[in-house]
Length: 293
Image (cartoon, rainbow, N blue to C red; front, side, top):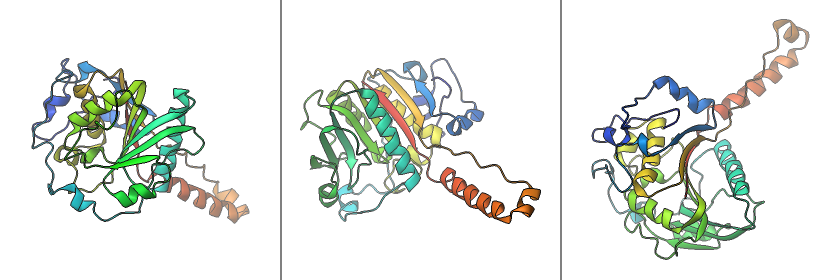
């Protein structure tokens, strides 16, 4: 790994993330999450196993609530699960990624989709397909051209899609709920076109009873490394990269006491601006682990 090697403290998972070179994490590198858009890149040497191995146990992927997910998601939830600043950052990130692909039209698969996909409006799309848990939510998503109701934890097979069908696969704040990540990431690799990108995004909000055990025991760097390991063990990805896409705004300079005494409105204006910046910077973080086929 370039910059950071993540190690999870959860029992039974440390070996999955330990480099053969015995590289260990420097916890000071956690500051990189707040200063760099690209956090790190990964290659096979960063993991204990190679593509085709699978180090995780049933305990690692266990959940507090192992009931069938269709029960949990039976009622539609027309809410957003991240704050407005995180949504804006995600949409802006999508715009950059989609533009970089330089295609006339993009075919996109939104895994674990819902009533909103956060895709930028000013992009030309071909097929935009959602796979999710709730029919009413999917029907309300105006960006989708087609959708499938499917519990990926019961049936991770995406055989409804042919090989090399999509330019982009998205998953927003749901990778932590996957109990069959190996099969799903293998399918993602199969149905992506060469040069296509997979964008797994997550924050720190979640339904704790439905997230897998090792996710609950991990910090941000650990969670990034979990997702990167899913790529590594599932298929031969061209590259794996972790990014922090939440823009941190600089705090405005405080006026001097003399300036405030001369013009009290400057103090009020500064407090208002500083408060807005603090609210943005202190909101939901937004991380992406990107795989290129």
